[in-house]
Structure formats: C-alpha cells, structure tokens
Amino acid sequence: MMEQKNRSLISAGTLVLLAVLFVALTILSSVLLKGVRFDLTENKLYTLTEGTRNILRDLDEPVTLHLYFSEGVSRELPQFRSYARWAAEMLEEFAARSGGKLTLKQVDPKPFSPEEDQAAQYGLQGVPVGTVGDKLYFGLVGTNSLDDQQVMPFLQPDKEKFLEYDLARMVSSLSRPQHKTVGLMSSLDMTPGYDPAIPRIPENWVIYQQLDQLFDLQEIPADTKILPAGLELLILVHPKDLSEDMLYQIDQYVLRGGRVLAFMDPLAEADTGGDANDPTSRMNAGGSSSLGLLLQSWGVEFDAGMVIGDRAYALQVSPGVGQVPVRHLGILSVKTDGMNATDVASADLEMVNFSSAGWLVPAVDSALNFEPLVQTSNSAAPIEASRLRFLTNPQELDKGFEPTGDRYALAARITGPARSAFAQAPEGFAADEYVKESGPGGIQVVLFGDTDVLTDRLWVQKQNFLGQTVVNSFADNGTLVVNIADQLVGSPDLIGIRARASTSRPFTRVDALRLSAEAQFRDTEERLQRELDETERRLTEMQSLRQDGELTVLNTEQQDELQRFLDRKLEIRGELRQVQHDLTRDIEALGMRLKFVNIMLVPVLIIIAALLFGQYRRKRCAGGVR
Image (cartoon, rainbow, N blue to C red; front, top):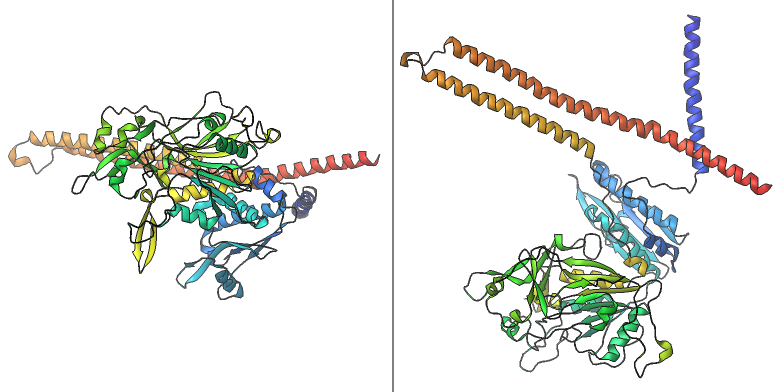
C-alpha cells in the first residue's frame, strides 16, 4: 500500500515537474526568439513581398489604420473569422515592418456601441447577421497627419488574393498624398467639341471621364512639339504619325523612369471623325498606329497590317435589322481564362471586349520581361486588316480561317533594362542630356494592340434618366484600364506586387482518401447491380420454361438461386460497410498523426531551436566581452 502511494506521489510530482519545465521553456523561447518570425506555410501566406516591405520602410508620412471587426457577431461564422484573423495578422506584420510609422488599432464595433456609430460614420458596410439583425463589420479606415482619409468598406474573403496590394496601395497613397499628374496624348476625339449638326454637345468618352476624376489629367495635343515635364504617367491613344522629335522625347521619358500606357491599333474604328456608335461609320473606319522604333528598343513586335480573329471569343453581332445574329471573328469578348491571374490589374476581371485588335509579340533576342495581361484563346489566327475595313457580312471572315493553336497577347506589360532607340540626341536637343539606357529599375510600359477597347460601345450603355446620363457597364474594359493606370502612377514597389495565393487549404489527403473510398463503393455497387441483373435474367429464363399453371410458384432451383442472390447481397452490403469503415479509420489515423505533429512534435522542435539559439547568443556575447 505504501509503495503504491509512493508511486502515485512520484507520478504526480513528475507531471508537475514536466508542466513547470514546459512553462519555463515556453517563457524562455518567447524571450530568446523575440522578434524572430518563421513562415512555414507552403505559399508564404504571412510573408510580405519585397515591394510591400520597401513601401513600409520608406514611409514619408505617419499612417494610422483602424481595423473594425465584429468579434461577437461573427462567433457563428468560423470560416469568416479565420479569414479575419489572417487579415489582422497581415496588418500586424505591416505595423511591425514600418519602423513605428504605421499604427494599427483594432476596434470591435459591438451592437449599439459608440464604436458601431463610428464605423457607420466612416462609411463601413454592415452586413446583417442572424435573426436579430445584428450587423457584421469588417472594414478598414486609414488616416494620416494631414487628415486625409481612405476607407475599405468591407474586406471581402473572395478578394483575399488582392488584400496585400490593396493595403500597400492605401498605405502608400496616405504616406504620399499628392495628386498624380497624368498626360493624355490622343489622335482620337475622346473629348469631342461642339458640332452644329447635333442639337447637343457630345459627351466625353466614359474612360476619359474616369481618368479625369482619378488623376490630374493633362491633355497633350497630338501635334505638340515638347512633352510636358512632371508627368507621372503618359497615356498614348492611337499614336499615329508621331514626329521623330516626339518619339525621342517619349524614349527619353521612359528611360528616365517615366511610365507609358499606349493603345496602338491596326484598324482604329473610332478614327472616323463621325459617331463611333453608328454602325455605318465603321465602313469608313481606317488608320493604323504604332510606336515604330520605340517598340524595337522595348523588345516588342507589332504588325500594324494584321488583326487577330478568335473563334472561341468571337462576339455575336447583328448584321442588320431582322437578321439572325452571327459571330464576328474580329470582335472579341475575352473571358476570365484569357486574363493574367497573377497581375492585380487583370486577375479579378470577368470580360474585356476588343474589336479589330492587333497582337503583341516579344522579340526573340529581347532581354526585357514580356508579361501578357490579356490573351486570345488557342482558337485564334491572324486576319488581314484590309478584310475588315469594308466588311458587310461577318461570316466572310470564316472563309479560310484556320486557328494556329497559339495564344496571342492583346495587352502586355514590358519591364526590365532597355536601351535608347536613338544612337544620339536629334538636332535641337541637348547632347549632354541624352540618356543611353534605363536606370537600375528598368522601364515600365504597358501596351495594347487595340484602341477600340476604350470606346463606349464595347463596354458601357448610356441612358437618360430625369435629364441625367446614367452609365452602366456590361464589360470590364474601363476597370482594366483604370487598374493599370493606378498601378503605373504608384511606386515601383507597388507595381511589383502580385496577387497572393488563397488562405483556403483543402485537406487534399482526406479528399484523396474519400475519392478512393467512393470509387471502391461505386465499384462494389456496380458489381452488385450486375449480379442482380444476372439473377433476374436467370429467374426469367427458368420461369419461361415452366407450364402456365405453375408460373406463380417458384420451383426448388429458382428458390435456391434467389436465396444465393440474397445471401450474396448481404455479403456485398457488408463489403460496402467495410469500405466506409476503412475510410473513417484512415481519416481518423491521419487526424491522430496531425495532432501528434501539431501538439507534440512542433513545440518540441521550437523549444530545441530556442535553446540552440540561446546558446549561440550566449557564446556570441561571451566572445564580445573577451
């Protein structure tokens, strides 16, 4: 009895000693590993990109972020809480990397609290949850010392792959709140003047209106002699017949770090001087544009005499009143699978429409990076632009059309080191100001092979409502252009941020086990059904051999056959149950292994690492003293 009591005391003492040792080691590791972070996730979900780290390191203006999240209201939404926790941890990493210039404040806007009133005043979106009508808030408010304010009304889980970019963009703009200056040089009438033949003043293109609202937009005449200074982005629309002097100025602007967004075209349908929304004006459409020798220095090839057709993305058009709509190979509606999923400017778009567009090709010997933003399908092929100039029946384009199997870039981003397209400064320009090649950051250029992508007819509908023009978009043309412009006016670090991987991690091993079990289950069921069909066939054959008066009575052979089937049916049901049992057993065994790794193995490894790191620091300090 006494010996058993002593054993119990020793066991209890051992457990207490282990508990004390675990707590001590935990405290020791937290002290020794303070500030040390390890991201062991496969897709580095908690590691900020280099561009974001650079933005946080170089903050000019202190920034404060207020994260509003309804803790209590979200208690019954575990998946949403998981996403919110990841977003909060990312913001904490932002603050930790900012050197004290970024402050994060987390606020729980409980129902009927002053914090909830603040969230509503900031314009945060409250989503009703539950039967009592409580509102779930999950938004972000950013401010700086100049009282500038930016708001993300609701951080949607389906937009998680863009969260880092959106946060970096907010912080960067609050740290540098100056207005961005964008120059627009266009050979098309994007801002048509008064026409006496029309009883109203024509409106600007919608894309022009959007750019004018977002930036300090400066119009630059196409025949201008000198490119204005101080531009943070130069937008070129249908750059045809540019003088050599202007091409040189654009070349030097890009090499000095200026950004360019250019829209070229083998057949600019809006280049008519008439109404681009009038189908008859397309018969007079004409005019191609290119940047010529600049494209060579940027490592890009563009054939201004060819357009691209695509059978998979061809849009249906009506040839005339009362006629059956047909697919037009030259008018493309590019869907999600044609967008670059890693570039934040194009990753979340659903549809972008092009018309008589050309395509861009990287030069074979180019050292620059050529990244397609929008591509055709593999059912595309080149078409001579002259075939579309006076086209009356779109079905004529089908004649001789043979897809090549290749995908063609309709828009592309060009980055990297580039050299000047000019061997020296032209006459009239200072030779000592000539720049031969780009700086360490390389060039930033985005090229489109189409100008019609900007026209209203391909992406918006306008309606008159009580004397006001209401614009509804049916495609993402404007969103793509604005996203790219917004990127290009930002810092080089912001341009380099790409869409992140999703935090959602499916249990692939469990799914594989379940699929395997379902396959076995299905095979067993099919075998049972085949045996049932065979038994019914044999019973029918035996029944057909009997006399008419005996049809209602089973003979001994039939009874034995039926009994064998019933016995076999029970056996197969047992096999099905065993398959389900094996599946449950395998999943539980996998769960136990994961629990062991998470609960036992990982803490032990962390403690060992902390001890080794502590020993290393002590030796280093001792060496310094000596």
